[in-house]
Image (cartoon, rainbow, N blue to C red; front, top):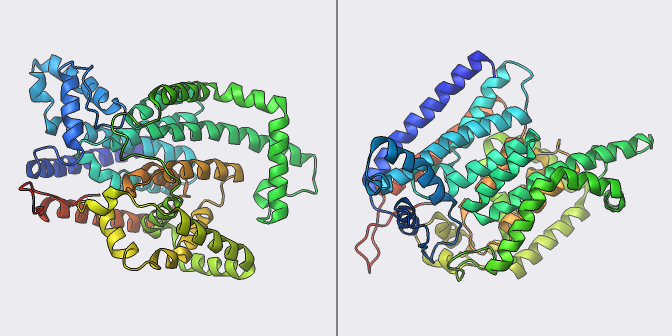
Length: 473
């Protein structure tokens, strides 16, 4: 990082932290007591602050990473300032931990973007910094910066793990992966993704070696999306896994991740599942439309940088050139929506969450609505792949498998589950123009402003309760 760029980025970090502190102060004054899931997280963290590590709230379903991190950050302040632990482990102080994670996310995202999109011209430095700042304010993630939830810390350690994997420090990445899992068990999927990127590099090299011997064959990026092209890739994959040298290279390169995978399997067997505590509301199922919700979510939040008139034209040209493929795709999507749509009881009952209103005012308007949305899903899928069309086919496969694993088993439509897959998608998008980045920043700022305003000022009460209720993600 050049000195000028360093100064600008440091100023950007300071501005981000200052604005976040102002918003944090306002939100905390308005909502002093624990709210929503904080009623479980805050008391549990306070028990840890008191050294009661053997007490556990059975309603909590995640591992204690958030509480351990909080104690690790707060206890030194207690010792240095000779303060009482209870005073320091207040709801406000615990929430403040996530502001630190937010600052860390900004820095990690910047390093990832710099690694994935190395500068070629001086003006790209501004775009990298603006991209990083914008993504650190990604609305769903940014909102939970001000509450004591696991999202900010989970995102920090997952992105930090991926950064280390990009730099080839796989042992460090594996250790960070353990931290990410301690925040949320499903982060094992992104540990697998980091291992997958290593395997992808080996496979890409093997493909290039094979193609160099067949000069009349097309490169991987030129393989047509046809049955013949698919068969070529399948044959290559079968030959790859049959070669002992390839398997040895994969094992030697990914052994830190393999150790974590083995440990996670042991934990799952001993725990009789990945969920700790209350499992009644966290049952896995094959909710395939979740991937459609995620891709639609991705399309909406990436509109300023991914959509253009030319892209829409190319989509319709693609449909006209390959109507049979799109007909099959629509048919498959219709079947998945018809047979595999699941609705969680919380989605229908809790009117404090935005997904409640998305479901109520869109999907429940008529039984046919969920089917009428399928063409939109098709475009969202096409846009997703088109935006990242420069990536390796094997990288596509690894990322898509992980996105499916992270979304499909979830019965509850919860936008927080989309944070990490969206950010990993977004950091791989080629650096957009400055105008598009400003439009993206404007969109995120408008959504954040509206969300925080609604949370603070648009309160309501349930008929059977005197507690103040607030709308949130």
